[in-house]
Each structure stands twice: as structure tokens, then as C-alpha cells.
Length: 449
Image (cartoon, rainbow, N blue to C red):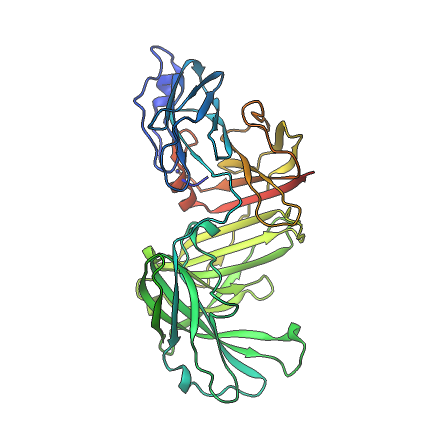
């Protein structure tokens, strides 16, 4: 899923019957549902998830009514269609998509390409230094001054957003100043295209005088920043200088993790600084046992609008089936008021026999999404086979294997619950708006061999 609008009272009219709910076809950019209420007709657009391009010739089934999309990616289903419907879409080269509990007369379904390749994220390599690095005082014996350079991430989570691009070489985005001769700071990183901010967290690294790294500590002492920086896809930049924030430009943030799901014992978080259209500077890491961290003061960073808390908890397994829960709190103006609040539980009882999938919905979730992918024996990315979106309290979904058979071999099945907060109607939403508003999400994964 990628995108979510707001509703009217048209469902009340549809419920009364009459001449039916006949509305003009209207595509929803990025996908979603609108014109609440189904009575006799449903307009279904099928589009590419990444480009929003219409997919002509896709097979669409609404209830028992089946057809293909035209050049605009549209199929108009008419017949005995009243109330909530299950819609199936299938297109060559894409994972099949099943939407359950749809109750809007205009539906746009974004299709995920069935490919194991990583998304082609627009990006470029940036390189530079930190002003005044060579004149920093030498650290004490057993200590080092370290700079971790990063860039602002988009608010929408996910690798396809360019939020987690690795540097050109291991530790290329790290500068180290030891007690001996000065080592120049020449950082490099790969950053997402667009207008962003580039920043470094300056920290004191203390080895505690022992070779045992488990007792080492890293204490943030300051920040250096350059923004805005305009990144053009494929156009590398050099000579970027990050300017340290003046003395007194930091404060201490305290994080209350609350009570994550008990089984999710791996817990951590990141405190970020929101920079409006530039994204979020996620740079200060915390844990439940080390829940205080130094962050930039909002008044010291031009364009800063608030703090963000991104906290996550996961099961302690590394076989690709770890359940997890994520909390995302935005617009916090006080560094002492960073609280995860109530967490979302993962869907329980996830099971599948390859012809159906069942789970217990999570209380408080807006919608649930089930993703079925191949599971390569050697690990790595799988190929998406089917996406199931559940917009009501359905607990068992019959998979359309007659129209879109699942591949043989091992599969992973992940069920996720989403909570964008108040203000969204499952009969009238845009997926993009939903993802921008996500406050809580949680998922569980099983493997089918």
C-alpha cells in the first residue's frame, strides 16, 4: 500500500436503494477508495504503484462480476453489487491484489511489481567535511571524537523512499579524531534525491580503557548541519561543509517507551528533528535503559518545527519471521515530552493453507494488509506474489488462486495492522494521506514451506 481522503454521507443515500449509486469514474492518485456506498456499480482503476501509470488489460473481479481494464486502467463493474465487496485485480508482471470490505463506488488499486530487485531510488553521492574539524582539541587517551554524518529522511517509512541508503563504502560517512595527529574529516554518503538537510552528530567515544567493546560508550556532544541541499538523481556533489551549531544549541530529550507488546523484547528508538519539507533528521538513538539523549534545540535549527519519536519493538528472532510494532509520534515541541504512548499489537493467529489466510484483527487498527512473498532458500528479497487489503473485520480471506495461483515453494506471509489516528474513513480515503498520518503499525510473519 502507498496512499489515503475524507468522507461524505453518500453511504446513507446508497443504503436506501432507489436508482442505485451511479457516479462518474474518478481516479485516486496513488490509490484508495471514495464515493462511499456501493449500489449496482463500481468503478475500478488499476495503476502501477510506483509511477501511478494506468495498467490496461488487467483482470478485475468485483464480487462475481469480472472484466478487463481499458487504456485508462478502468473497469466499470455493474450488476447485483450492493454493500461491501471483495475486489481482485491481476496484471501481468504484478502481484495480484485483493481488497476485502470495499464500500466505495470509486476504487483505485495500486499494483506492486512482482520482482525481487531493489527499488530504483533516485539518489546521488555527497562528499564534504565539517568546519573546524582540524582545530578540535585532541581527545583524552582512550577517547575519540567521532562524527556520524547522515541526511534527512522522508516521513514515509520504507527503503523505497531512500531513507536507508548505505554509504559508498563502509563507514565512509564517519569521521574520527583520535588523540594522535589530526585525521582530516572527508565524509561521503549516498542521499535521496530532492531538497534535504545533511547533518553530523558529534560524539565522544570512550573505550573505558579496555579492549572489550561491550562497555564502550558514545555520548553526543554537538551537531553540525547544512541545509537546504538540493540533490539531483545521479549528480554527485563535493565540497559540502557542515557548520557546527553554536555552543548552547543542544538540549536533553527524555523518552518514555511505555509498555510495548510483551513478546517484542528487542526495543529501541530514534529522536528526530522535523524540518518541514526537508524531511526528518533522525540522528539520536535511545533505548529503554538509556532513554536520555542530546538533541539540537529547536530554536537553534532554522526551519525546525518539532521533534519526532520513532520507537520500535520486535521479537528476538533472526529468521525473517520476527513480529514487530512501531510507534511514530510527530510534532512534539518539548524534548521532555517524548512518549511512545499506547502501542499496537500485531495481528494474532496468523495462518494460511495457501488457498486462504486467516488472522485475528488488531483492536484499534484502521486496516490490515497481508503480503505474501516467495522465500528464497539463501535469504534475501522475495518476490511479491499477492497483497490482501482488509478494510473490515473479516478474519478469513479466500485467496483468488483460480485467478492468480500462488507460486510453489516456500512463502512468507506477513499480516500488518495500521493506525493513522482519527479522521479516516475506510469508505473514503487516499493511501498517500494514510501513510503520511501513520501513528502506529504492527506486523507478524509466518513461513509456509
